[in-house]
Image 1: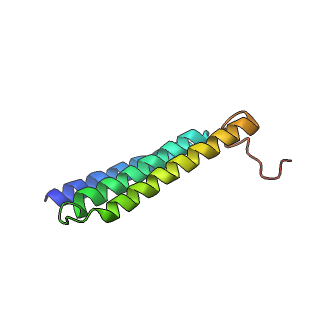
Image 2: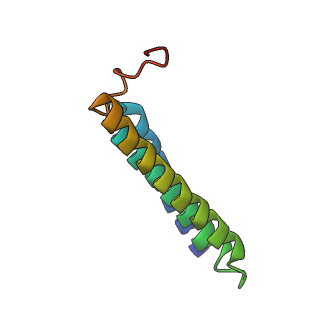
Image 3: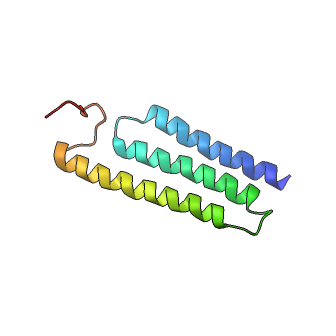
Length: 98
């Protein structure tokens, strides 16, 4: 029963991140924060369902490292985008602008 409740809590966190991504997509910072909520839901589900029954946490460390790398790469791209364009609006992005 414990595994079931933690799994559903992780799914709820993941769905909250997905709904934030759907409804708050005007700024790139909001998109990055919703990606972090999605990653938190996945880590929470894996850690509390699979991690409690196994003493091997190496897979969890790999998932957390990928989440940290994704966050640092996203923030560095956001800083460079703000330096070039002056804002972080999704609508102001144009790939063909020279």
